[in-house]
Amino acid sequence: YTECNEVWTQTTDYFQVVGIILGQLTVGFLGDWLGRRWGMIQDAVVMLLGTIMLAVATGTTTKGWVIMYAISQLVFGFGVGGEYPMTGAQAAEKEVPGSKADVLHRGRNVALAFTMQGWGQLANLGVLMVGLLAFNSKGSGPYSHGAAGATYRFSFGCIAVLIAWMAYYRTWRMKPVTGSKMKPVGQADREAGREAASFKLLVTHFWHRLIGTSVSWYCNDFLFYGNATFRNSFIRYGRAMIPRQHLRVH
Image (tube, rainbow, N blue to C red):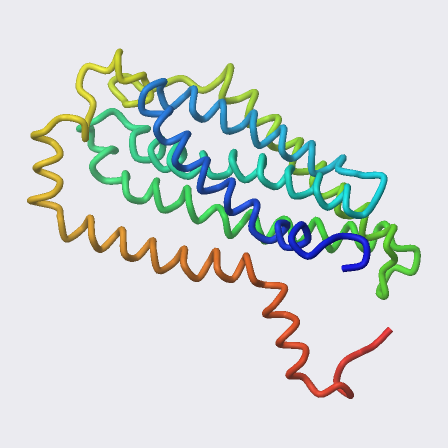
C-alpha cells in the first residue's frame, strides 16, 4: 500500500454491495408509491450513470483513481440494487391479475428474470476474453497494463450501450398492463399486499411458501455475494495451494 492506503483499496470490494443494499431499500419503497415504471426508469438512468463513471474513471494519482472507482461502484450498485425489487415485482405483475397467464406463469416469469444474471456474467466473460485478445499485441498472455485498461473500459462501454437502450425502452416504449401494480399506489384501485385482508391471507395460508422462498433466496444470496465479494481472496488462497512448479510464471 505504497500509493493508496489499505482502507480505500478495500472499498473496491464492498462499495458495490453497499450500493446494492441501499438501492434495494430505497427504490423498493419508491416503486410502491411512484409506480413500478418510474422505479424501473430511475434504475436504468442510475445504472447508466454508474457505468459511464466506471468506463471513464481516472485520476492524477493511483489513490485518486481508486477513490473514483469506488464511488462509481457505489452509484452503479445503487442502480443494480433497485433492479431487484423492481424487476421481481414487474415480472410477477406483468400479466393481468387473475388471468390464466398470471396464474400459470407468474412464478416462471420471476425465476427467469433473476436467472438472467448468470447469462449476463457469461456474456461479460466473453467480452473480457475478446477484449484482452484484441488489445494485447501478442494475442495471448502475459497481458500488458495497457491491454487490461483498454479491456476494462471496453467492457463497461458495451454495458453502457445496452443500459442506454434499456432506459430508452422503459421511458418511451414500456406501458403498464391494465390492472397491474405498475401504477402508483394513489392511482391503483386495489393494491395487493397493502390491504389487511390480503396480508392476513398471505401469512396464514401461504406462510410455508413464504418461508421456503425467503430462506432459499437467503441461502443463495449468502453464497453468491460472499463469493463475489471475496473472490480475489479465494483465488489468492487457491493459487497458494497449488505447487509452484505447476504454475506458469511470466
